[in-house]
Image (cartoon, rainbow, N blue to C red):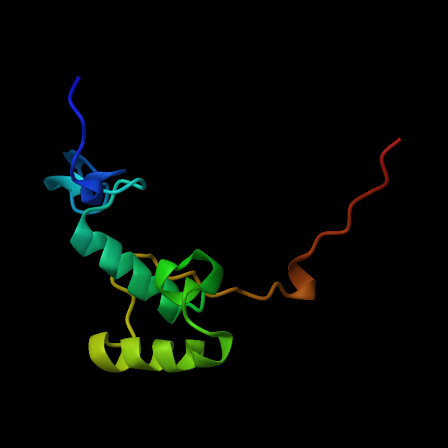
Length: 102
């Protein structure tokens, strides 16, 4: 029976990265090291503190400093995640009044 001496490969396997389609070692969510870093930065930019592994170890009062550092170093634009479309307000004139059903 073969034992795994290197704990650094636990949870990592060879596959295609789900983001860039390059064969590489991917993590448990299917991202290579480069794409995982982009995902982390995007989560920090969007203030999704509960989903970011980097922000997990960061004190609550230092999170905005972390975000500002990421934006200063890598820019404000999202790298991997798609931006949410702007919400459009429905005008009252477009709403139809429905007849009561029996």
